[in-house]
Length: 78
Image (tube, rainbow, N blue to C red; front, side, top):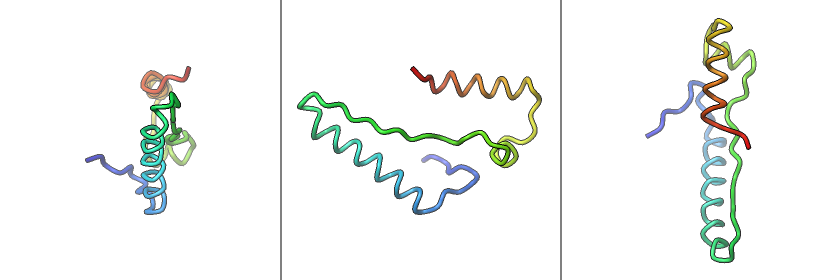
């Protein structure tokens, strides 16, 4: 089981995200035989001052660079 982020998303957010994931899988199953790919985009947290304060705490410039580099490595774009 996955832990919920410290911000504790609302029931509406959780239900909507689950519904989008389920719909994506169902459409992929239905349309895959016809060669159609189905994907969904589920963006993560946006690094804002509030996010920094609430989730990451104080970081030195070196720690921030290491954090950003780790995120970029885990979630490559392109």
